[in-house]
Length: 299
Image 1 (cartoon, rainbow, N blue to C red):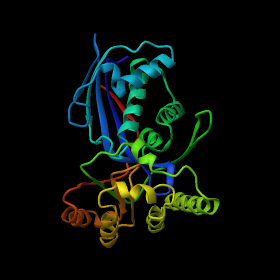
Image 2 (image 1 turned 180 degrees about the horizontal axis):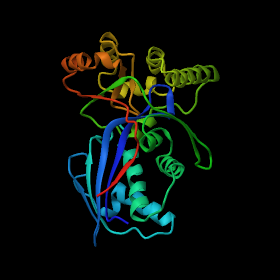
Image 3 (image 1 turned 135 degrees about the horizontal axis):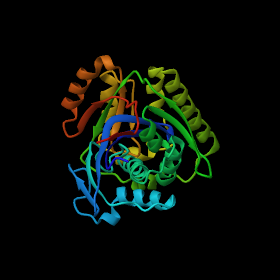
């Protein structure tokens, strides 16, 4: 077995409006690990997208890898891990799900667990608590998923998303726990029926690759965006400007505070220029759907 590995995990966006906790999309923004077996544990962040000070035993990557190794009755060997991430923390781009998926894959490789794709889907979704970001990071592409009471995930996976995506990242963090705290505990039946119908139409439009409809239903969420929007910098202004510049639609990326637009690829460059001009306080990134999911190379 090789003693050096390179693991790449895509970040993700979740929900896309009404696809609450079930629809995810892998993005071409990555968490990358270089792993070498050695005598003691060492985790090195090669950028600012990680804690500046931490104990190894408290680091999410280590916690997940050890948990998985223990679950399969293996001893997790000491590693030197160099991490590079294009995913800012607590911004709604799946940084925690990517770290969970990476930790599972680290244990899978260094402990030779021989996990299946289904194992990885189940384990990552169980730890994350819902399957949207986790499945998108495992598989890439678009995922529409459910998880049953036993933690078994069922996923429809769609690749070749023929559109581009623009993310608007504000210079503020928003913890998922805080974003969930503003959500209602229950909905009236008629309200829930409308919300569910819009989620169904979003999923069907994504599968049909009818991006005009995708955009319409991305902007027709009743489950979470009406309640979270007040937490999001320039939520209304970005929606309006993106639509005027030719976006199909705009929605919260996960729990926020990042927003994401789906746009025709043909207008991508002009669209980004327009958004940068209007929202200079946001970090605006043009990206595509990742189509590979987890990738492992042996150095």
